[in-house]
Image 1 (cartoon, rainbow, N blue to C red):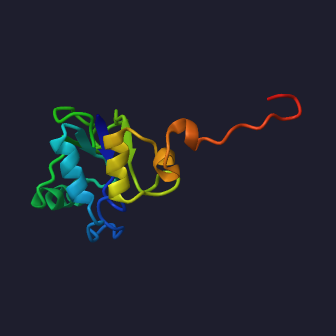
Image 2 (cartoon, helix red, strand yellow; image 1 turned 180 degrees about the vertical axis):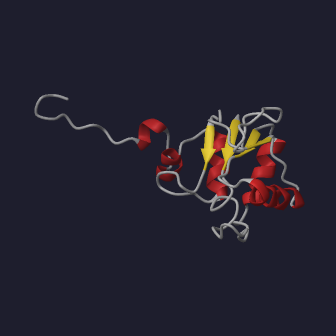
Length: 139
């Protein structure tokens, strides 16, 4: 699976442009996903030196991404250092609707191929979704 991962607020606490403290289990979980052959892309608004600081911070902890702010390592990005769009099957970002689950839940969602709703409600997709009530006109 190709997974795009944000940096600030997702791997580390928000302290931009500084690097915040690691969010518990973020690096460990991401390293486990890499070991399980997932392709991780660091996808962040950081550019230039601030981006390099984030990449170096990750590398110092043994976390190396498949690509950084691009779809694959050899991709040529635009002059501003920004790829138009990343091609990923999953985005891990603190700005997701509903916020960022803890890293244990994120790992479980990927490993067990479950949605957040399925994990939160403790069942399958069919059990997690409420039954639709018929309205006056039947829709």
